[in-house]
Image (cartoon, rainbow, N blue to C red; front, side):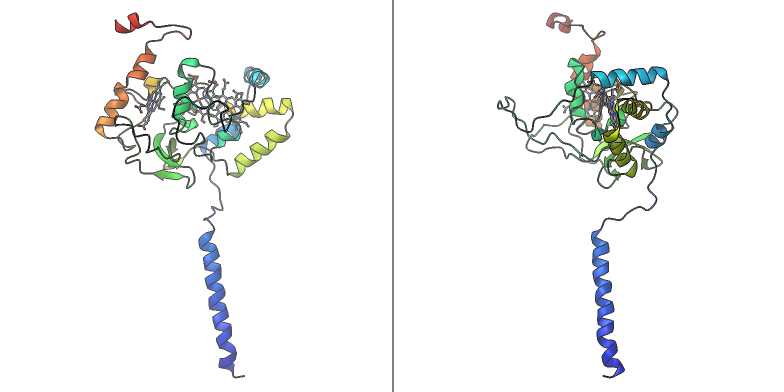
Length: 273
Ligand code: HEC
Ligand code: HEC
Ligand code: HEC
């Protein structure tokens, strides 16, 4: 066989295998070799819980009951519900918390659980005093910000046939990068692994470290539903002028502001005053 005859299939073979490997590369998502360390991860790793924080963590774990969210209700639901309970599941907090994590405060829990569908846990619970974040819509799968045009529903005729997408959510960013941990990162996986293997005292310490950088409560409703001093730059997030107005003037947050104490009851007569 001539040299050319030998080379030809060889070249085809090289060309072809190149194509195949290109195809494989194109199909696997790009992997970032140096995983960026989020500000939350830094703070959690550096956290040194004191005696008080450990005692609180111990109490929390003692009182904690695992609630199970039923997929199918035994009794048919009175209200017509559409959409899934689960929202963007690639969140670090969802390693341990249910999709409806708020239950203790009867008055606000339903609203907070509703907000979980479009606001990251960290927007409300990770608010360190020494840094300023800007808030953007975060795509949890791509782990980057997306344009919020058209994502707000407030101030419009609500059409239940059109559901809000479960992904993205409004999340804290610094220098263009999300400051939160994701479920698929090695940090997150290690925590999940440690948690599974931990005995009670190890769990107390781990829980305390993870929650030391966090706030036990989120902001007041007015923290976002306020014209002057909203945590969020609604315009930059893609809200129209009317929607920003509707956010600030929404009757429900205004009503909730009237309560001064947890066990207070407001009668209709008082409401009309
Ligand atoms: C490794 C498990 C684990 C992870 C991860 C985790 N939590 Fe928790 N968290 C717990 C447990 C357990 C409790 C106590 C029982 C409960 O309230 O569910 C708790 C309690 C809390 C509380 C109430 C705190 C208090 O002291 O009153 C908040 C708020 C909270 N978590 C927010 C978050 C947020 C936000 C994230 C993500 C940044 C997160 N958690 C990640 C396990 C975890
Ligand atoms: C819109 C703001 C907001 C968002 C988003 C939010 N929280 Fe909260 N969270 C609060 C507030 C406010 C409280 C204090 C209790 C209350 O008012 O219901 C709270 C309390 C809690 C508690 C204490 C237990 C309880 O029954 O109240 C836990 C646990 C918690 N949040 C976890 C989470 C997790 C996990 C996420 C994300 C999946 C999340 N939160 C997202 C505002 C928020
Ligand atoms: C971290 C910011 C933040 C906090 C805190 C917050 N909200 Fe909101 N809320 C929003 C955003 C953003 C929207 C708009 C979502 C949209 O347009 O789709 C919204 C929408 C709503 C809506 C839906 C309005 C509609 O007509 O669809 C209600 C009701 C509401 N919030 C009530 C509350 C109450 C009550 C509280 C306090 C318990 C609260 N919010 C706290 C950011 C917040």
